[in-house]
View 1: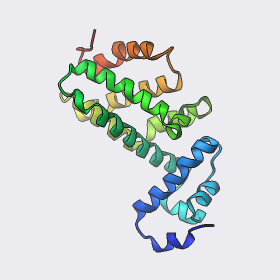
View 2: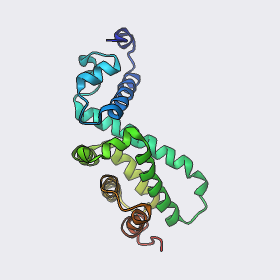
View 3: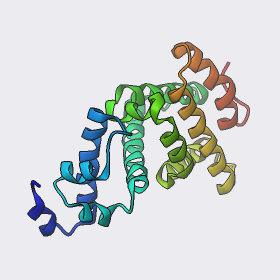
Length: 197
């Protein structure tokens, strides 16, 4: 295995985790999510299986870490691109952001592969169990609905994630249809009934 001594010398868990997740990214693009086992991940990352399990207890834990990291990166890219929208209508800005998030996921190969039909079960589990995604969604909701209690913002954040995952796994018939679905069913909850017309 390549680079084994680098693992022994590097005691920083965050860097090691990132190195493993970078290796996973490449494997997911090459083989899909289901086609990747812990042996392949360890080999690709240049570490032993024991080292891999030191950072990730099991494949699910690795999936959660990967999903959280990639969700953060997708959201950051979209927020940066939409920074100039600060003065625009809140509803329209939110709608455009949600549509852009869908587009960003779809154009990012190592993220888009998760929403292929054979990976729907994994994505459904992650949508319900990823603490990082949960925190991101709750923070997103709190931006638009500061009136909500933390528990209500969390539930609404989970619902928004499920709606977005649904559109990613079962796409509409184009951006216009998805935009209409988001406008009619997601925006009213995020904007307390204000929505956009």
